[in-house]
Image (tube, rainbow, N blue to C red; front, side):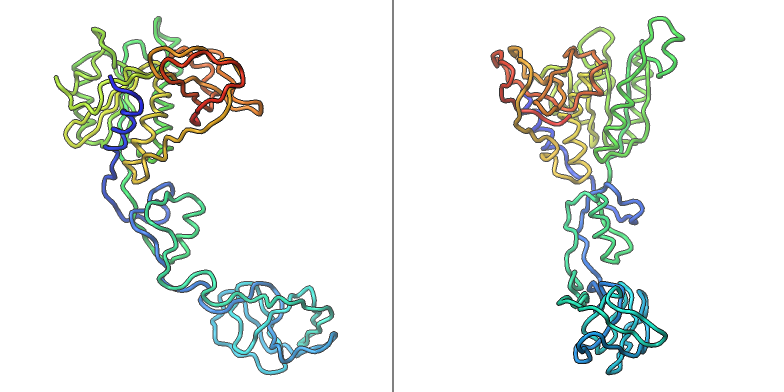
Length: 394
């Protein structure tokens, strides 16, 4: 059994990208760039108007009021290269190419049009209201560097480069296998005495998707070695990462480890944390298998601490950034910590972190309201309300 810090270090060591692929922008959301995105041309491509109004020459401006003949019109998408004759104006719209010869756009609120003439009635101010060619970026500029996860902001910038496809790290393909004779699909436990709703795999499936993985499927299986072995064999053929839920301890009916062979190549066999001690990680050939405890709280806590960096690194991100502890204070008294590093569920409030009503590893009621895990080191003494704590967002 190893410490949490050592387990996290080993996870970061094996959480490596799986190779890159080229995708369309429609398929790029949430993916991590394996190559930076560079601009094919400058933006704007030519001088363009920043406002709706009238393009004029500085030399033609007079004391207000004065008027000019309207010689033409330019809208966004108009081909550049039109020329503004002297002592005239162009009606122009935001984003339109500025005609050659014009060096100012007077906003329409300061002008009044009558037929083919425009009269400027109010002072135009110092602004030229023209966005110069290349003022945003130049051809060949790096707009989004490699390693960035493409959220809605990064996608907007990347699309401005006018690249039809972009290179991203491949998403890890994941299969979830939940084990236990007592488990039933949500909505069906009432129909069978002794059954309980299998509540962990829906949460872990959502967790996988949120952290860059691609869920192939989630299976619910009884504690039958032959069925578990067959499901494990299928998963090893298809997935980069197999997540086993339950059966991780050493009981007579805990088969999650044995279905992968007598001596798995462990990254770690268990971790000295509470909750979640039975969590394990192993290599099976080129695949990784993560075993999560069957108790809902244990499973989700260990997922936040160890599955998050694993998926982040495998999908091309920086695994270390997935586990960042912050400093705060606990509004409740803290109990003494035992011999294992302990993570207490809590929720963030204006007065500090408030402990969940129950810290039992099987408790589910408080999970939805808990958005922080308070980190308690082995042997830490009891603390009064208001004590400083280290925590991670849950």
